[in-house]
Each structure stands twice: as C-alpha cells, then as structure tokens.
Length: 280
Length: 300
Image (cartoon, rainbow over all chains, first blue to last red; front, side, top):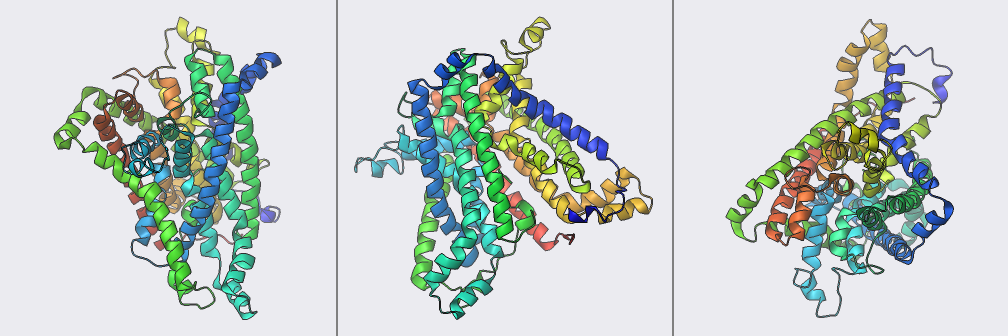
C-alpha cells in the first residue's frame, strides 16, 4: 500500500456503492445484532449480571469448555503438525485423498459428527466396546467433549501449518546440515522456530472454534449438570427457561472472550506472515 | 482466514514431496518417516475416517428399504425443502456481499481497511448459539421489535425468516474471505486498463474481474453452501423445532436421534455427509484447476 502515494487518481468506479453496501450489510446482519447482547446485558444491573455469570453451574461449564478446548487444541497442535509434515514431506499412497479429507470437519455438519462420534464411543460402539473393559468411558463424560472438540479442531492446525511448510525452502535445512547440524538439531533449531507462528495461529483458531462449538458436543457430552455441560449449552438452557437476561449475560462473557481471541489470532497471523515473508 | 484457515486458493501449491525426499539435508531417517506416518495417519483414520464411515454403516443398519423409507418420509422431505430454501437465500446474499466487500477492499485505498476485514471475520469467532440468540434479542417476543412484530402478525423467530437470518450470519464471511486476498493479490491494473480503454464499470466487472476470480468465487460459494445447509446451533436457537414446518435437516437429525430412531437419524445424516463429501470433491477439483491456471500476482 506504500505505492498508493505515487499512484495517480484511482479511475475505477463503484467505490461508494460497494463500500456502502458492505457497511450497511455488515451493520444490519452482524454489528447491530451483536451490539444487542451488550446493550441488553448492560441494562440488567451489575448484581444480576454477576449472579447470572458466576453461578456454580455456569462456572463449572467455563471450566469444562475452556479446559477441554485447550486440551483439544494442544492435541491438534501435535497431531496436526505431524499430519501437515506427512502431507508435505512424504509421498505415500492415498496422500491426495487424505489431503482432501482433512477438511471434512469444515464440511461435515456438526450434528452429523456429533451423532457419529456418540455411536462410535458408546458402550457398544466400534471404539467404545474396546475402551469399556479397560475402564475408560468416553460417551456422556467430559472425555466425550474432548473427542468432539479434537474432531472439529483438526483442520485448523493442518491448514495453517501446511502452506508455511510448503513455502519452506530446502536451502535453510541444507545450510544447517552444511554447518554440521544433525537432522534433529536442524528440526528443533531451524524448522520449528519457522513454524512456531503458524502453529500458534492454528492452535488459537482451533481453541476459539472449540470454545463456541455446540452441535458436535451436545450429543456425546451427556450434558450432566456440573460435570459435562459446555458454556454454549448453558445459554440454550437459560433460553429454554425463558431466562433471556441470564442467557444474554453468559453470551456477553463469551463474546468478550471471542473478541480477545480474534485480536490475538490477528496478531499471530500478522506474525506468521512476517516470519514466512508473505504479504499480509 | 479464520474459518478456512490457511490461504484458501492462494496457497493451493503443487506437491513436491520428492524434492524433500531426494535431498539428504531434508530427508528424514526411515524410522522417523514411518513413525510420523503411522501416528499421523492413525490419528486421521481414528478421528476423521472412522466417524465418516460410521454415518453410512449406521444409516444402512436396517437395510436399504428402511433407509429409503426414512428419506421419503414427509417430515424429512419438508426438512430437506427448508434446508434448500435457507441455502438458496443466504448463499446469493452473501455472494453479493462478498463481491462488493472484495471490490471495495481490493480495488480502493481507504482508512480502516484492516479493521473492516477483522469485522467481516467476526461471525467466525462467535459461537453459533450466540448467532441465534442475537436475533431472538431483536425479533423475539421479548425483543426490541417483538411487540411491533406481534401487533402486525409477523413471525421471524420460531419461523423461516429467523432460520434464514441465522444461516446468513454464520455463513457471512465465507465468500468475502476467499475473494479479498485473491483480488488484492491481482491488483487493479487490468481493470484500470479496461476503464481507460472505454469499458463501463459493469463491463469491466463481467469481462475482466469475474473471469479472474471465478475459481475463488466457486470455492467460496461451495464452502458457504456446505455450512449453510449443515448449520445446527444457530438455527436450533431460532427454529422452535416444529416438525414439518421449521425443521432443517440437521435439526431433523437431532429430533430423530432423540426419539431413538437411530437408523432414520443416520439416514438423514448420511445425506448431509454426502453433501460434505461432494463439497470436498468440488473443492479439490477447484484447487487443482486454480493451480493449473496460476494467478497472476501483481508485484506491487
């Protein structure tokens, strides 16, 4: 954009129309409705607001939602990096199919994923029947929440790390090898630092998605109060009890956290682009 | 790029695994290769492939006849119809928005551009449940316009318009986020040339811009459509779950599942899973085509 000063006057038409429509549509669909959450919750008084967002059942749901989302994002960071590495660095039969199917959680409706995972991990399911004898229960426990969140978060890490890995030229590892580094040293001292911003971005994206996730979780979670209720479910529960103020207060807390995560992700993406020399 | 992560079409690079495996500096020892492949593919099979297969196996558990009967059932067909209506309204509107936002952002300079892009990304980071709630706060019985809507006998919440609104919200950024980086990378030289040579604005758009962004556009539309047809949380809040009236396909899956009609639930779910697979096939095809027609990136 630095060239803008040297550039003659823009001759292209439609600036007013396109920007005007963009801003109007954005305001009507997104900004004004989201503002409603904050306006409604600011009108309810601090005491009532605090009571709604800090009741023990709601606090238990924060602990579950944020704890499991962090754990799921960490699992995805590890396996997502391995999957991205395998897709970029190795040739193996079926590589193209695996590459396409990685996006399945983006394309698959969350409710479908939810009932499929529940069927798999139930006591008599394909996977559950092997876990049951060794005393591990997944369906209808917090572990089930984790499984669902790992499913929906997987593509985020793979798809942020993969392009950076593809752009990574062989020469920096060659230089490391020439200077006497072992393969392990080249990986930990050269490759990993280059991938770190992308890996953190993928982690943050998976985490942000997991915190708000609803459809894939509610079937497998069992939704036991104080044990396996996620925060988005608490909003639904309050709505079903016609407690609109309570639902709105929890939504305000979640939205604030989402905004903070969005800013963090933007900063991380800017860092990724700088580090990998891409234009932002 | 919040929902689709990665750079969409721009990063659809060709695969050159051989360049790493032929080079001793980047070749991993065989045991590492097999260890990473085993762990990565084991994870892939366990978390992606097995759940996908489970949908189809469970759907056909009671045989083809039961499968077909579950699909042609009137409540299912009505859910399919509503899902198609919601997608048919929300995808074109978001397409119009995406093109308009990308045109303003990529072809002009103005202050606050980065902030605008962040705002366009917002719906990606909002929980689907909140996406439904916000429209209840505005149009619901206790909402801002609730009394007025009731007085005029207009139903938005627990009716089709609410479902469409919630679907528009959750699919809002998809097309814009594909087109903005693509059109920014292409710059504005070609359009400026067309205008200087006497083309009108619309001619420039149809003959110059549209052919250049066609693959990115298709890519954005199919991703937007998949999400529009599959959205569950947001639609669940505003739907009211009236069978045969305000049920979309994902909501119908939930109802059948909660009634312990597992085979029927998975039958409807299998249609949605097929849609997801078709989406991925089209997506791979578009990426492959786009990689063959390299985007001319303007070195600005």
